[in-house]
View 1 (cartoon, helix red, strand yellow):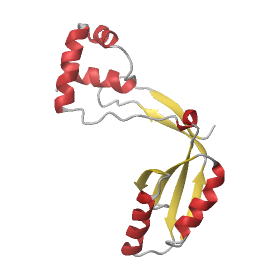
View 2: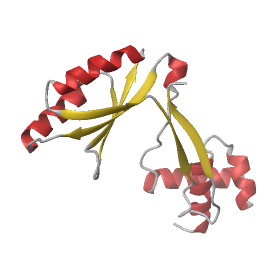
View 3: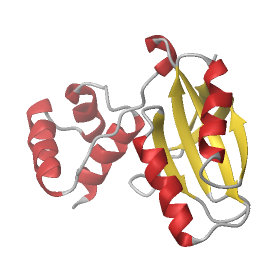
Length: 159
């Protein structure tokens, strides 16, 4: 991967919807050149293109739960994790080290579904669960690809 590929990746990471002609102007190359390089990157480097879904526009809300298991053995933890994967509301599951064991994002139609989800989880293990219904995060640009530094603030959860 050379400097041009890194610039193309940095530009896409900053704004993946910009036209190839704009990226071409940045690197002083034609859109066809950018397309060729991008196809090569898709074959070798780019494994997956993630998306950020605005659940609110679809009539849903994302609710995030921080879960701390009080005392749990590995077998019970696996049972809880398997149960979380089977729940239709589960959108994202992240293992944590520190004050909490798991971060789980649920997608719900209504916030009144939270007590049911909490009860459902507590039937499997004694847990301490904190639900976050609205939080903000800053996404830092991929500065390992370019010298530019920027950050974008996003609001997640309900509006």
